[in-house]
Length: 401
Ligand SMILES: Cc1ncc(COP(=O)(O)O)c(C=O)c1O
Image (cartoon, rainbow, N blue to C red; front, top):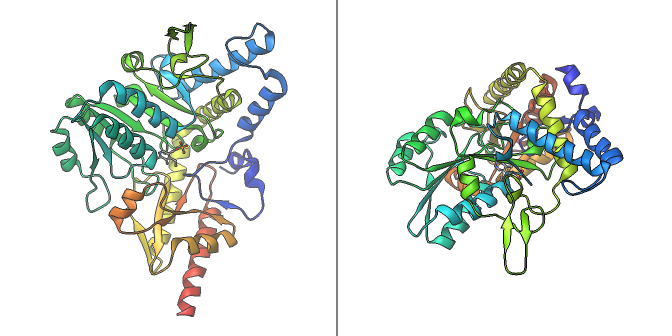
């Protein structure tokens, strides 16, 4: 793991314990080099140039798409769309799929863990179509309530949006079970995989969902790029999301013909260097022993969980043995932002706030929390530095009291 850590230049900064990986991960040299090499040698626009540079840029861009398709075991490369990230993927779906499947009185389910990126686009689409958005509630232990989910499924929703791993809590969903139940009632199933891809191997065919969205920057890739995978039957039937260059075959002032997949959903000049960087991130991930990384992260998370549990005055939210990546907590009577500032002074980077999950925070009866989140390069020293700084904070407030 120490040699893996050395591949991340940002982590060489002394005194930095980066535990904000659910917000965004650091990037390995392989990704930085791929992007620098693209700009230094191959920079050109893709798909339409007559020259060598454009051909090289196109090869790299479409090669990256093939790598991403391999990463998630997509059956067809053209089902793998580049987006700006999970947020844009959800907007694309709410706008385009929403146009296709939502009728007045239609029902859309979004789980209680959902990020605003899953809630708001579908809320807007439901508003436009006089459809209804309902949350899949949580059980008292913090997991989703499967019985309540089944009762909602009995109302025959058109669309079900599920969060693979909660970014605010680190809880994981039993995806095969939840997807199969929604498919059994004929719903279109969309998975927000933003917090899953960096941590576990994803196989969209085995999952059986209709769509799977994720962001590059949360899986060691660049910002501004992500992927939406979808089944061809839906992508073919859905209207385009944005209009302009690249997504057309012919245009006249009277009408336009739209391009084939994936270009139909990629209007304008794409994020070329970012796609190249994301392809490099996917290659990098696939070249690792994924099981060993997952085991390492799990051991570290359990270690952090045990240490947090041992601290008096700390409330842990839904900490399970099978959490992925993140742990959320508060110090009783303290504002989460104060804890974040204290930890930062000790070089420990965590995220404090509502984590773009205000409905979840309302459900928990809190305004926000602190979240420590791991990546494969974190080590025990990072967790120890975090626990030591938090212990000092607890001593400080107790002395003060
Ligand atoms: C679960 C989840 N969904 C969606 C998003 C939105 O991702 P992005 O901001 O990369 O579009 C995030 C980012 O925090 C997330 O954690």
